Length: 358
Image 1 (cartoon, one colour):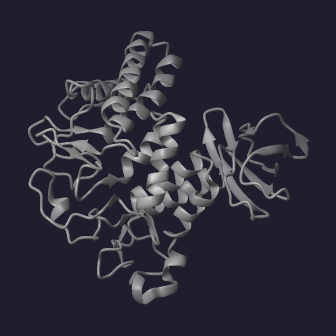
Image 2 (cartoon, one colour; image 1 turned 180 degrees about the horizontal axis):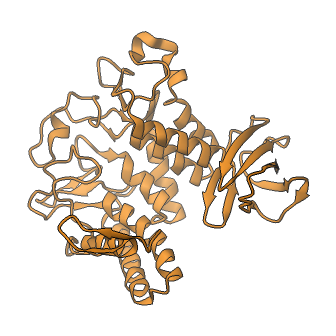
Image 3 (cartoon, helix red, strand yellow; image 1 turned 90 degrees about the horizontal axis):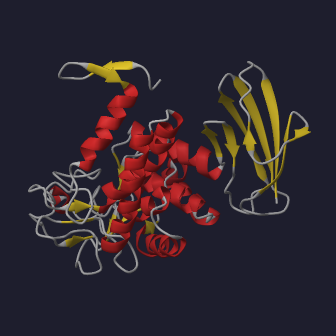
């Protein structure tokens, strides 16, 4: 895959691996003097459309996201024996971790950004938009936060952001337009990115809670989004009962709980992914299929049928000990195996996997 030759938009061509490297190195050219990636017109949240127009504002979420990309991609570079790029990447990884924890930590959570005028965004110093969801989740997902800060940040998510219909994107909602932040502040309070549940990001809360091994909250963050649960009160939800909404109105909205942008496939795919990969805990890795459930302890277990690399795996998880996580034993086609990584068979056959938690 990485050796496939791919054209550039403006002419020429290079391998897919070279494309990846060039994209990463371009990101290196847009750092602040403090070593934090610059915001520009916006980051993942396009509503932050005025934070960095002058290329001075920083995005701590981009720092975390880039950190995750580099930690993952450096493994690819090692496999390809591209040691010069590996050395450079490891330097950036180390510097990013130091910079974000030095400048991005606000005491109980991580900042979202700083503006061109060096004002904090997503800080306890702000009257509105004190805490943003994404920098807390990606501090955990990326591994940039140590255990203590990860717990404090996720406790803040639970306290301020996890509401009836999923995790809010920020709190409290903006009620006054701010020309140094962007059009997010001109949305009605509680609508979409402005203090609503933006489902794409809210699914990542499931992932982060699961990484923290907080199975109860991982499931709650999922359950509160899940369309069949939402549609029990269809007059409030106002969306199709079988479709994941792109967003739901937040508590400050007069239509609290209203679903919007249904048929939003990006969010539905993420909702499915966090449910299967991080609650059921069945996820693909380079060397096989990892079985690592993180489920409510009252579950007796579950059965999951998974097609993976040319074979079908029928996975039966047994939870007689009423635990949330921890694989005690695994049997593949009746034979015990070490660890919880199931090898790929690629034989076109069906294989039975028995997992005992304990």
